Image (cartoon, rainbow, N blue to C red; front, side, top):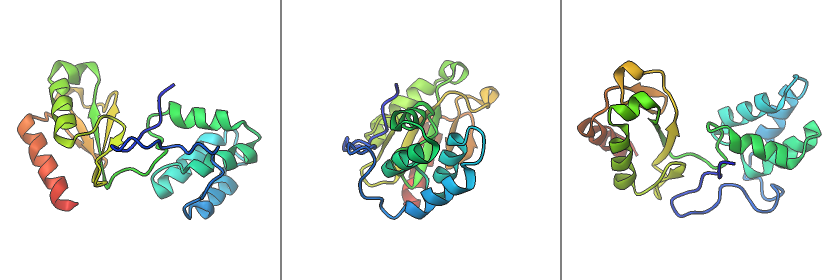
Length: 177
């Protein structure tokens, strides 16, 4: 099973108290997502998507509440959150940078871009820079194979990314942060 994302400082994204701790003010969002979607067949995914759409991640206390409301085990809910790469168990950085790791992008130099990014930012995939500016995530196809290597920053697709283009992109992000 994929490990939960962590910050560059290595703190775990999921709480160790079974999700029963402090809610950080997200109780209303979680309650509303549950109430709006619990009637659906297979309600777990729509609930998780609704929460993440509203606050950008699934707070640790949410898994326990969702499990209780859907009569699922806490492990079932945590398993879904950790299985799907797009669900986050911790707040993302102000900018989310996704790097394509599919074969076409790898063949066109994505591995070198990935290494450059990790070195420049001082983080690995699934981590956020200590200043909270950038979260680095792997993605396994952006559907932009003809323009590889590709990445996505804050939902905007970039193709034919070069080392120089990557530096310009990072400089732009740093100026915005």
